[in-house]
Every structure is written in structure tokens, then in C-alpha cells.
Image (tube, rainbow, N blue to C red; front, side):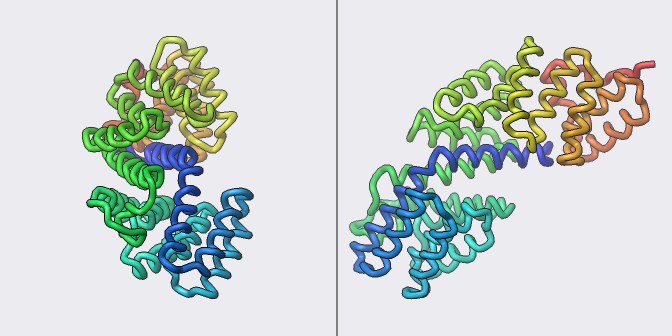
Length: 355
């Protein structure tokens, strides 16, 4: 596996695309749940919860939203729907541990809906619990594939409309696709991508996941096509680094450097931009510039196999044999197949030390 921070970053990045694309749908789901709560005879809880959903929807004020959901739960302790809503606020505020606790209680209370399992999958992903996240994503998919029930209390979430079901399905399939992609189980990942695109052919996350798989397999033209298509449907910030990778795999390294530099300006804390720009510099023979970028990337995450292996090439080009050997050995300890990434990009992986 080549999965150090680089692989982890891609997962977080891909899920961030999903969350951004689905923000409105997520809020629609919350409003739908409020409606179901009213239908189920919880008018007091639903009324207050609806006011809080409006705060989240209109002002995106997590502090106020949290305070009001706490008020709801003070009057209706253990209400599964209110707990699930508060969990969304916790997770969006960077507190997945509290979100998981609320969702655990919510699922204990009503047996779990596709919405609560999909939300817990996200929270567990954010907490670094990849295997439980996958299990929750699968459970959400299973519930949504059940025969729709007759009423709003049905656990399959069938009481809501197609938009709500679409949200939960794309959530679960996206997480599962990233899980399989990271483990290089490409056929399984692509099956989930196909499921997402059958719901929404313009879904940015699915296009970027498929582009990432194509890039990892050396199908750079197909990856570029998917990334450009994704760029049509989403904020340029989210696709700039994917295009940076595509251009580095091509022939115009000056264009690649410009694209990667734009990505670094937008996302300076991600290793990806530095790694790809350094690779472009290597292909241009500019080893000093490459080494500088690799050093920045290594400062963010010192044990990434691609960063270490790339830096070994740059150091060899600059005559630092000891440093090159050290980096190469560390890279291969992390990932015995680290050289493949560079071979696919047309770089020599047996760079002689400059004398």
C-alpha cells in the first residue's frame, strides 16, 4: 500500500467534495425529518427542532444551532431525531466524537434510519474510524434498498422524497468508494462510483474518485477527462489539484507548474500540490526547485512514501548520494512499490548520483 498521508488526504479531500456538493441536500433531509416528526405526533419537539434547522439552513451558526438543540433535548431527553440533528452540528463543527455519541444514542432509541447510519459513517470517517465508517455506510445502503414501508416511521427512510434518499445513497456510496479506492480494490470502488453516477451524472465526488483511480492505473487521458468534467460542475478550488496531477502526467510542464502553484495558493497545507509540482520540476531537470517542494511537503507529513522517494531522486540529481539513499530506503520501507508512481509519470527511478 502507498497509503501514508497522501492516500489519507485524497480520502478526506474526496469526502469534502461530497459534503460540499450535498450541503443543501443535507439540510433538505433535516427539514424532511422535521416534517416526519410532526407527522409522527411529536409536534413540540418538531416545532423547536424545525426552528433550529432554520438557523442551520439560513445562518449556518453552529453555536446557536447547538444551543437550541440542547434546549430541545432538555425538554425531550433522548429524542432520537433531535440527537441525530445535534450530531450533524457537532460533526460540522469538527467534533466527530460527540457526533458519534449522539448518533449511537439516536440509533439505540429508534433502531437507526438510513440518515442516522449515513451521518455516523461520516462522523466515524472524520474520527479516523475507517472500518466502522464503511460498516455504517453499508447499513445505510441496505436500509435504502429495502422495500419502502407505509409510513414516516419506516426505518428505510422511504417516507421522505427522492432527494432525501439520493442524499443518503450518495453519502454511503461515496464513503465506500473512497474506502475501496484507498485499498486499491478498484473494481469495487468503481461499482460504487457507477451507482452514484446513475443517480447524478454530474456528481463531482464520483467523477474525481474515478479520475483518481484512472490516474493510479496510468490512464491519464481518461483521468483528465473526468477531472475536467468535474470542474464544470463545482467550485474550481476543488478540482485545481486534480488538474495539477493530470498536467504533470502530460507533456507541458510549464502549464503543470502553473496549475500546481495555483493549487498550492488555494490549499497550502496539503502535501499534494507540493508533491506534484516537485515532480514537474524533476521532469524539467530543476532539481533544486523540486527539493524545496519535497522539503515543504515532508514538513507537513514526514513519512509519505512518494515524498521521500521523489526527494531521493532530487537529491541524487544534486549529488547528495547519502541523502538520496536514506530517503529511498525510508520510502521503500513505507511502500515497497513507491517507484511505480514515478515510472508512470515518465521519470527514471534509478537516478544516478551527480558527481
